[in-house]
Amino acid sequence: TVFKGQALRLGAPVYDVPGCAGATHRAFFVVRADFLARRLDDLRGAVFLLNSPLSNSGMNLPRRALAEIAGGKPVFRQVIETGGHPASLDRLLRGEGDVASIDCVTYAFWRHYRPEMAARLRIIGETPSSPSIPFVTSIATPSSIVRILRDALHRVATDLRCTAARGGLMISGIEDVPDEAYRGLLDYE
Image (cartoon, rainbow, N blue to C red; front, side, top):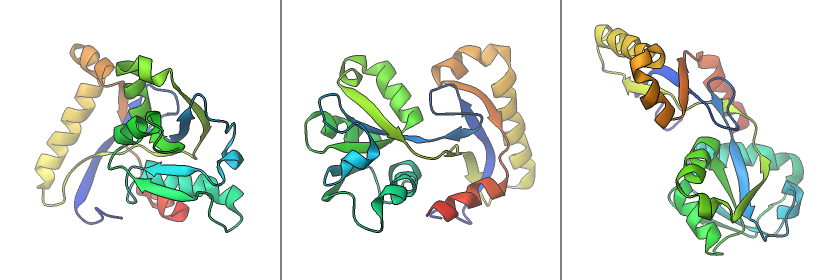
């Protein structure tokens, strides 16, 4: 909703990480390994670390997942905005909060590059899935350039010369995702 009318989708990445199926992603509810909570219902009264109130994976998807257990009442005693998923993970490890909802792609990269820190965390739940965050261009981009960008993106997704780059980005492909899939996020909201 924040960028509505400002961008054209070029394609959505298919990530080769846990939590993704096709051009989708989800968020994981992450806690410290020593935190007592074992399931989402155990989070009542906890402190939630939020990357941004505008975030799909940090706010919209977890709100949808928690609505099923909330019974119309607040789940958390406090919500702290951190400014980003990595900041939420760092603050979680410092004991400044109890749980964070982390995009599964961000979490995969964080685990890859900070395995010693990741070993001190665990996942206790996950959100419903959502279409992947798409590659976009400005709505003012001429249609001839949009076609060139889409073609280039799809070539990068299949060209053998780009295999290492795709692997480094944990991307296994690019898909076209229909408008309806993204409109479904408004239903979650």
